[in-house]
Image (cartoon, rainbow over the protein chains, first blue to last red):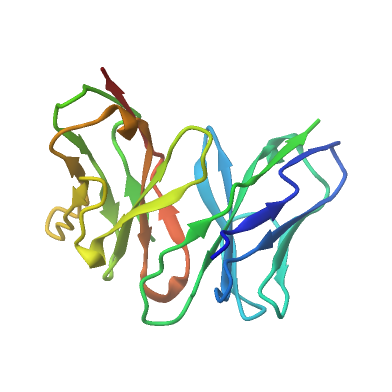
Length: 115
Length: 109
């Protein structure tokens, strides 16, 4: 099976702009999660979607939003970018079924730099 | 709340020596524990899950509920084990992983 893919791999944006990141999960996986990875804070959970519904959300401001499509692909949007949003954004997919181990498979990430 | 602590940021051992990467967690329910590894310039990948009680690449990890620990062990480290290791916890049906800050393991020749 093909792994999790993320596009674009690198982005440079200016403060105040908005950005959309895309994630395609492993075929058959219906759960997609997003994480922010920074040297200082490590890996922090943003949100998780399953069958187009957000099931959980981390402690990030409302400028961070996401959605999932019927084919399980997901997008993450960050509006009004701040310098502190510079990070590696990771997407992970999982079958996401209740009662099953919640192991996730990660994509390569999108490196966002805000200037 | 769920929390994962990896007390060592850096760990350096010689090839052939035993290695133990520590992980302690805090969670009120029954957690699922995982170890993830990230080799240089590669994506984060699942190494071990506690529920499987398996050995991958010579690594094992035992869940100790009394000590709330899930330490990763290998009896004889190899140079190719050099990587960043993350311990992660999933709390039942809350559908998220909480990660520790990671331990950078260096295995010297």
